[in-house]
Length: 480
Image (cartoon, rainbow, N blue to C red; front, side, top):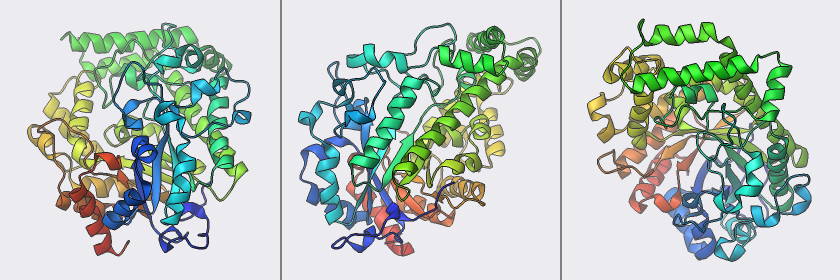
């Protein structure tokens, strides 16, 4: 299980600022690649530290998504590893260095550029890797074999699908990636993110990304089929159960209500096709096994490096995903967890989840009633549906979700570093951040028992005054 070590897990080197010492509370900052590759770094780090006492940097170091790189989306965008891959760690996979290494910014090795300057400022660098939910178009022929297969047998190309946890090619790539970072660079650790959920929940439209095609859920690739058969699951009945669940949601979206009501029809589906639920369990446990393998790999290279998980915000809206992502289980293979508690943008995201749920399992209720039921189930006391877009969720939501994570890890020395919302993008009229609201969310994190904080989601999105609001709260609390 995790070590529960404080920031960086290593003692500071001579000349390092005191903020990098191993007993300092985590004050982390995610950041896209563009400013790290193109701007002068000293003023950048000085601003972070002056405004908010940042002592750890989390660059989006591997991504095929333009916004994480910090560049406009174009048909020519490639993305990939913004550090230089060392190919000895990527044996037996179909990817070349050209497939993996990002050519943007002249192919600069961002970690090699950033780490020595960050250390001078007492800032440790953590590699932030988010699994790609979008098949990288420029290099799709080589990447495609790593991706999931939906239940009709077609390869997925994007969300809600992604790389398959049971695919040995993807396993080899991911293990090689974290080993490469751990051996090749003087980092504080790795944070891995997976903003996906299981196929059956996607089929039932139970997601903050509601409205997706419910007929394209995963995974039924050759490796998952073998694993399922080895478990004694009837694969064809599992497929049929997914088809029936998809039909259930499509009928709801078309206004065709079940004869006996939505919840009864949902429960009847589970009784008729328990194989679908068994396939659900296969996906969930496969992800846990994959996470455990990543953790073991990093620790085998350097036990002092910290390894943790970014926890998708959808888990704080969905009682179903909460059941599948138990904090006590996550804690068995990490040193820290970063639950996303973006309260400002949460209003729109929660209402999107409500929309999907009300077209599915909660179809017997009006959407406002669905929201109220979820509030009761999740122990929230938040704004009504007609005000939620404008207000977002409160600082009390941040405190409750932080406390839930802390309580879930009562028997583990794993630290909780919540990601708080500082200007996460919203549509016009959907919430707003102020220095005061940001400060309230920061205080709520520590009131909830967290050992650190990650100011989120991206430095380049943050208004300077709102970042300063976070810093003011941290100073008032004596954190910095």
